[in-house]
Amino acid sequence: MAYDTDLSFIYKNPTRIVFGVNSLRDLAAECNELKCSKAFLVTDKGLVEAGLAEKVEAALGKLHVGTFDECPQDSGVHIVNQAADIAREKGADILVSLGGGSVIDTAKGVAILLKEGGKLEDHYGLQLFTRPQTPHIAIPTTAGTGSEVTWAYVVKDWEKNQKILCGDDHIIPNTAILDPVLTQGLPPRITAFTGMDALTHAIEAIHALQAEPITDIMAFGAIRLIVQYLPTCVESGDDLFARGQQQIAATTAGIAFSNAQIGLVHAAAHSAGALYGVPHGLANSILLPHVMKYNMDECADRYALVADAMGVKERGMGDEEATLAAIDAVFALSKRIGLPQKLSEVGVEESGLGQVAELSLSDGAIVYNPKLIYESEQVMEVLKEAY
Ligand SMILES: [Fe+2]
Image (cartoon, rainbow, N blue to C red; front, side):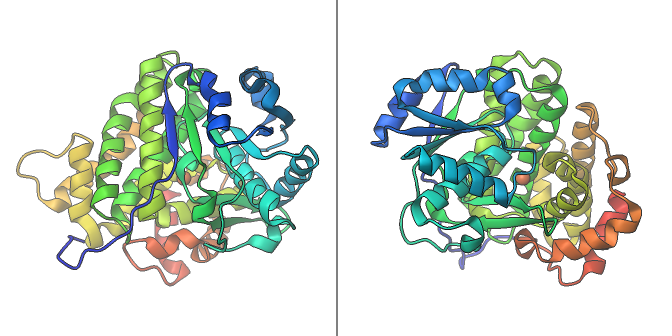
C-alpha cells in the first residue's frame, strides 16, 4: 500500500476546535461567533443526572431555548425525528450537543431536519445536500467517537434492527469544544472502550483505501497519544492532563478517518452493535486485532508503521514481524484497561455470527477496507477468530 507519484487526495477539516480546561465557558461566545442566538441542547439523561447538562445550560445563559435529553445508547431514527420536532417548536437556530457519539449524531440528524424539513428517513444517503445545514456546536463527554469533527452519522432503525450510516460534508459540526473537565467523571469502563474506538479510528484510517499523508500524520500522532495516555485515563480518571491528551487524540483520529475512511472493523462492529447491542467501542476493541491479522497480507507495511507509533517496532524487524507486534500491542492495551477479548463475552450468540457477517456486507465502511470483501464467508473468518 505504498504511496507513489500517482498520489492525489482532497483533505478537509472545517471544524473550529476550542480546547482547554473549563473551555465550556466559551460556549455563548462560540454561538455568537456563528451569529446564532437560539440554542437547543441535545443530550442524554445520564448527563442531566451528572449535572453536566445544567452546566451547559448555564454557559448558554439567555441563548438557551430548550433541551432534549432522551438520547439512548444507540440513538434511533425516531429519536432524531422527535428531537427535531421539539427544536423546531422552540425556534432553535443552533444545536449544541453534549454527550458521546450517539448524542452528537442525533444532533447531526436534527441539524438536517431543521434546515431541510421532513423526516430523517427522507434524507438517507451520502453527500446529498448543496447548502450548509443548521449550525452545530459539539461538546463531547467521551474521548473516542470523533463525531465532533466527522461528516458521518450513525443512527439505528429500531424497526429493521439495522444501523443507518449517512454522511454529508455539510453536517460536520462547526465547532467542537473539548473541555477535559467534562470527561473527568466518565467511568473507567466507558473511558476504556471509547478510547479503543479512537484507536480503531486511527488504525483504520491508516489501512483504509483513502489513506493519504496528511491523515497518516494525524492518525500516527493519535496512536502515540492513546498508547501513552489512555491507561492513565482509565486508572486515574481525575488526571485532567491525560484526559485532555486523550480528547486531542480522539478528535485527531476523527479528522483522520473522516478523510481516509475506515474498514472492516467498523462494518462488523456496527453490525454486532445493531444485532446484539454491543457498545461500539467495545466491539471495535475486540475486532481490531483480528481484522489487522486478516488484512496483513495487503498492508503489513502500513501496520509496521503502526507498530512504530505504538513503540513496539524493534530494530531489524520486517513488516510481517512488526505487524504481529502491533497486533500483540493492541491485545495488550485492551487487556491492560480491562476490556473483554472475545465476542462470546459480550452477548453475541455463535448462531448469530452469520447474520452479523451478512449485515456487515451492506455497511458503508466495508468498501474502504484494504482487502476487498465481497462475500460473507470472508467476514465470518474474522468473526470466528474473534469469537
Ligand atoms: Fe467508531
